[in-house]
Length: 471
Image (tube, rainbow, N blue to C red):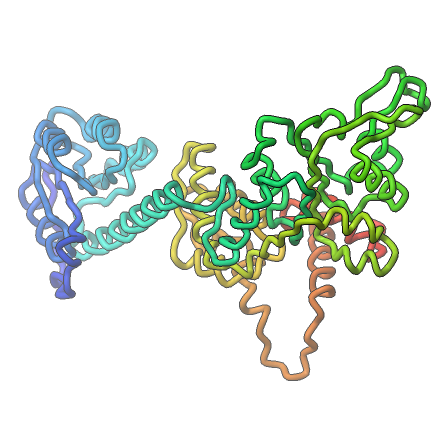
């Protein structure tokens, strides 16, 4: 196809090119010399080392023998068509980006090429200014890919403790406590806000110690019906109550030699707290309806987002059980206290989503700045849920600031006010308004509200009970 560079008053950029060590490699594939030379001229100033090819055969040989970052490929090459060359190039060099060059009459084919893996297309005739703008955009994209790849490699080499991610000083202290707790048989009390990863810490303790080959059984004390908690934990014998057609072992017995993780232990009814205390002290349990004590050999890990000391003072939690559980304790810092870990966490989550969906996700600097500026009341769980929603909603592979929920991008503006008479709300009131507002906007769907807020459903129901809400 014969194509010309459009007349233009554009001057070749005079800005300093990238340092030599950052040179990017460009391959221009077109059977018209003027197109090849025009692309080479602009690309050289922008920091590209340019190779040219006038046929599909030359292009494929160049791609096989050199490191190529970007390819400008003519759609209507003689012989093998541009689409076929694109498919072969993406098979041989899937990481290399391809820009299709096409005439006005073949734009539909260019769009089809993008579906086959091309990064973008440019229509002929084009100006040198258009080439320059496109190369600038691709260079930024390639730098972003490189930074994300390097960060992922760092994550793989050293990201934290077990499946826990974080390198902040607060996390280093947590890792040391986990390592000590793992080789002890004493109970451990894990403190942390909702969404900080208390169960993940409990699993790290279990799998890092001598109990790793034994069962790990999590128990959500807040989600179990109060009347069934006792039979779930201690078991029951046949005929103990209506519907007990056969005996059933409790979770404390099933976990023999392993670990029972009591999540949200502060939700245990006060009468069951006494029985749990006896089980810990005497190392035995009595199933519901039985007169026989059953010996147990389990380690207890407990977690709560409540202030148990306050619960003890108010009489809602037994003092003796608190001291029994609090032999060793550790606190998981909220995400707002370790903001430097946000890029590490975000990259890890996007990497996981890329493997799950088969799409490679990246995040821009502006979007990352928004993540760093937000306070994350739902902590790591909220961050993961927010990124998962972004990936589900976007049609591309790059997460921009505009793709993030408005609650995140608008957070800094909401935290400041120019009105001197504006009232500063207590955190508890802000939390209440956020939760109630989310449920109202979602037409009362509490489970969806909990997911989008990044908090557990147990926590949401407890908060609604505190607010006296009748949703």
